[in-house]
Image (tube, rainbow, N blue to C red; front, side):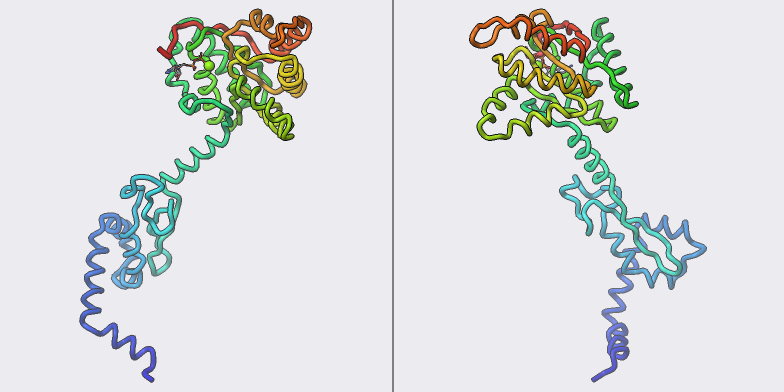
Length: 310
Ligand code: ADP
Ligand code: MG
């Protein structure tokens, strides 16, 4: 058998191999990024360094840098998805260092952001709402914006701040504003949950039999910032009022957990709604107790304006 060194020499000395090698070298040296790297390191890099590093330099030319050749993270064409190479000089060779590419960094941030906002039965477009999309143009909205900014600032510093009971007619943008608050909080790493209350109540009623009720209640009770959307639109029974709503609000009061509400009703109208359960019984004292809790948790604010749905 031929010694391995000799057979390698035979291969590398073959003219077609030499031709391919010089072609590779040409291709590598034509790459503008490699050219820039070589001229920046000209004092340390000579011909032998380049030849020793040819396979790494070739790998470098084949990878997308700064996401230039990849339309999205899902279509990343690099060896390690989401990572792009940088040239680094290590002694007498040039090596590659792979770091997260801009698309991956942005995608990770988006996922983290999304994971901070939990929602139940809230339309997708609402979850994308941002403050820059909202016109806080009239005096009342400017005041509301101030309240919300103050809330977010306090929450960031870990201070307790009352939420807002945002009421106004159908379509003025109450739920949209809640979505924007949730996003603003997520930018500050504060988790929140938006819950469309009528549907949540319906689901809880259906959960009595299957024992998931406690779990569902717990998630809503304990989340850092809770937004109860459309309170007053649910069909109220003494059970949903006292055992669900009352219990959630009581817990959040004693634990000092910020809570927002939206409603088509002002507090007086809501109190009336809560006084009359499905069977038409009047239970004023219990309704008043729920209203007291809402007042403790949130500052009432009337949102004016036209219907944005039309
Ligand atoms: P409400 O909860 O007061 O009934 P919504 O918040 O659901 O009203 O808003 C009604 C519609 O108008 C939604 O489709 C929402 O996406 C849109 N909308 C509300 N506020 C804005 C806004 N500031 N900019 C753009 N669209 C908005
Ligand atoms: Mg709404």
